[in-house]
Amino acid sequence: MLGYGAAAALGLAGLTRAKPTLASSASPRLRLIGEARLPHRLQFQGTTVGGLSGVDYDEASGLYYLLSDDGSNINPARFYTARLSLETDRLGEPALTGVTSLRQADGSTYPAALRGIQVPDPEAIRWRPASQTLLWTSEGHALTGAAPALRESRTDGTLVRELALPAMFDFQLTQGSRINLALEGLALSPDGRQAWIAMEGALRQDGPLPTVQAPGGPCRFTQLDLVNGKILRQIAYIPDAIPRAPVPPATHADNGVTEILMLDADRMLVLERAYMAGHDAVSGNSLRLYLIDLREGTDTLNIPALRPGAYQPVAKRLLADFSAFTGEGPGPRLQRLDNTEGMCWGPRLPSGNRSLHFVSDDNFNSRQITQWLAFEFFD
Image (cartoon, rainbow, N blue to C red; front, side):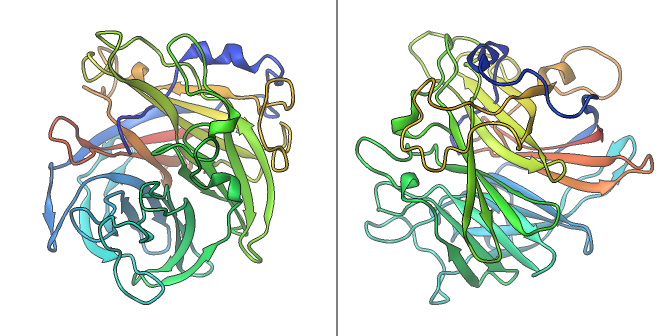
């Protein structure tokens, strides 16, 4: 949710035990189609639009689902629906079509943060065509005792179920999730039978957060069976070091995983996002897209603490550094990057290639933007 972003090439040094290449021989690549923005604090059907941390697309209806990470502080926790015109070389303006409040088991909306109340911090959302439902993650709320969660809701916002997650993700004093660095990413297998959830940062017992000098400890990616709720396996992913030092050096900088997306049954896209204070809107934000093969790496599900040498992280391949789409150059160019947290497949283009979409979380901050990016994806 906070100004947390994608990564740097320095982090590859932390993967010396992982295989340097993946199963596929050809690297997918991106072509920028265009950019669109939503107005800051747009008012829509009695709500304030912002904090868009998750996005997914329903091919049958042509609707995009957009999850706000407002944990009921401005309006009750909610998601939006939108339509978007897309052509080979043009991205239209997003048109919101509805807003829906997420509901608790008793049918009520989620309240603002109170101790003992299961307040959500919504982060990622995925559409399930087979059940016509939505899966969504919450980072939880350490101060209220709300643990990170994976929930399933109907399109009217009513709760279907909450899936049981390993206790390792609970907030504890010396181990477990760090505040605002918990369940940030969510991906569905192509057949819709499994889900992967991704931590933004390392659990306390698994290692440090990234610095400018070194990559962070491993982020755990966990696979679940959506039919019976069983936890299947888990892998470790190493986020990059922070790309550059903040200005002045003692101010804020960070990097972590903000979203994951299945490319096929075995390969996953991973979005890393970094923020470095004191720089301009391009150099102060970093977005990098990686490819991993889920058949690689140690199953870490039963390893309480991921100490160096006790496991093998999954290898990763850089597909795109979004700074390549800024500055001078041919085709559409970006004037800035921001706090991008949502990623999804969109409709296929006339070329037959898939469109790949990204949405940024403005944190309801006037210095940030709600940015929608569309790319053509070549595999």
